[in-house]
Length: 172
Image 1 (cartoon, rainbow, N blue to C red):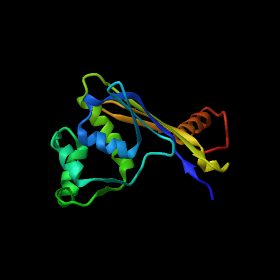
Image 2 (image 1 turned 135 degrees about the vertical axis):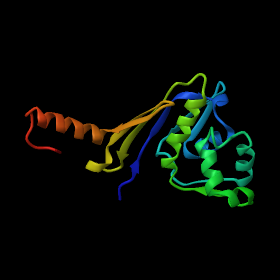
Image 3 (image 1 turned 180 degrees about the vertical axis):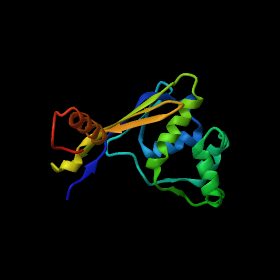
Image 4 (image 1 turned 45 degrees about the horizontal axis):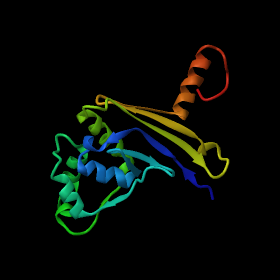
């Protein structure tokens, strides 16, 4: 059986003051977190976690500093987990891979010192499988989240080379 990994790095380090407590709580579950000089470095050796569990009590405390207007994460929790937030059980969030880029963008939007973040991902596999290698680059600004994988980059290369008559085979 092959193991697929997605080592991921978020740069630059994010000042702790730029994050709402709910965002920091969330990001520390999605990624590994190292803190130095009042800034957090987010990364993962295996890939961002898609399913996380947050303490309802910690979420209640962390939400006190957030508003739905400044945090899509806060809005999602309030809209989708109102009973769980008031309860005592842990809150499970699934599909976090769809949410963490928005959380990072909200941080950039509010920040006075960050105008962008980058996310670099490597797609690796424990066996030499053609679908197990590549990568993705993401640029997050306050206005947009841009990303491109090596697969979409190769598709563009094939289209350009085909249109120029350079190749006749490959992915159209």
